[in-house]
Length: 136
View 1 (cartoon, helix red, strand yellow):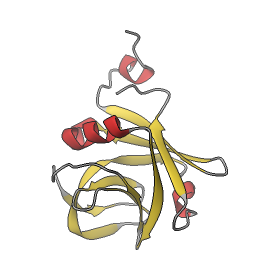
View 2 (cartoon, one colour; view 1 turned 90 degrees about the horizontal axis):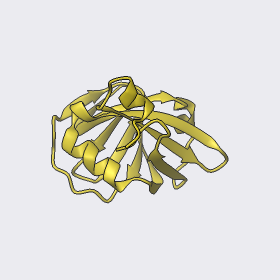
View 3 (spheres, rainbow, N blue to C red; view 1 turned 120 degrees about the vertical axis):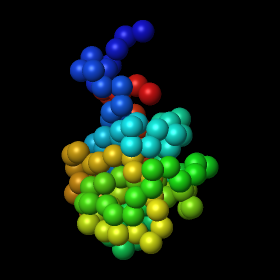
View 4 (cartoon, helix red, strand yellow; view 1 turned 180 degrees about the horizontal axis):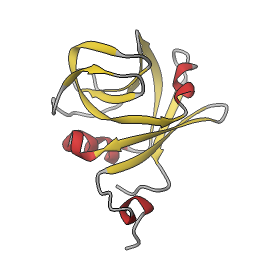
């Protein structure tokens, strides 16, 4: 089995994900297995995933049909953080620093293309797929 560049660099925890929106807009998200391994494994198994966007104050949410419990929960997030809201089955990207009333499982961070999420409108479709340098 051939190693991915991320594995060649010694990382078995980092996975690159590409978020694509109609019109060619793209963003790169780095997911980290060590921050919530059970949740990340469930997310990776569900990829590729296409979802309509739900805009919430300070975040963009993508519907994911995942059943995962609370794992290493946090309630405070920074702009660009990616997290999973187990109570609603949502993958959330934070548009600004925020505190949540409900605990979310951290997943990773948007590394490139944050403006892609800033410009989203309610109901647009976002597709998530494993990036070229990652293999789950």
